[in-house]
Image 1 (cartoon, rainbow, N blue to C red):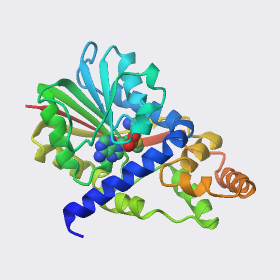
Image 2 (cartoon, rainbow, N blue to C red):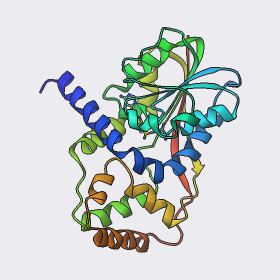
Image 3 (tube, protein in one colour):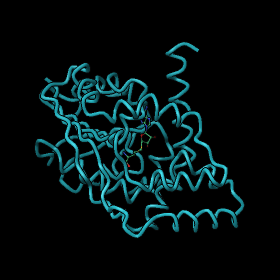
Length: 270
Ligand SMILES: C[S@@+](CC[C@H](N)C(=O)[O-])C[C@H]1O[C@@H](n2cnc3c(N)ncnc32)[C@H](O)[C@@H]1O
């Protein structure tokens, strides 16, 4: 398979995983990502009140809600229609599209907020170039990723319990982790991708976000309802699933950190 075909293959696999995992995402990871989205919107270098903002990879709408809360006018875009359908009547308009080929005119928005979506693109610099295209001159691009060199311990602890029950990472997730998340999780490489996309005044900072993850129940719900775990968990016999959940809860210590680290990219279109 050539590079273009393998990129498209990965994007399709990611789309299917989120299409199928939307209900799980809404019930498990969403409360954690809500705190992360609120922190990302707080990190804006300019006030967003009355600004038109594209919520790139909007998912179940947590960044759109954080944007509404500060008086912005968000529009969502996501590859997975079922993610956009979550609470559809109570959230801003959403469009199904690939972040690498946005169906908007140049300069259509004052800002783009990309909460944990750039790290799903085979070529994050190309995605950032699309962000630059759709914001007006001097508009802002704000994005978050997880740092590759540090993470919340629940991720590896719950995964080792899953493995003991027969789980193995789906192919798309392995490719995603090794090929994309490793790069977007590195502050220097993330900044370089923004520079290559033609953005200016690029800054990448690391932040610890209070996400309430010292509660093992929340941490387990987060990890068992991710697009790369939910199909496995849902396929288990109910009694085995209950045992897996109990084992995962027991494996998490009482002194889990409540915070999760996040990289924040801030940049501007020239
Ligand atoms: C980790 S979730 C984050 C969702 C939401 N922004 C949040 O913070 O909760 C990543 C989202 O990006 C979307 N996504 C993945 N690849 C995409 C692409 N190529 N174009 C648009 N959206 C994409 C997924 O469908 C998913 O909703």
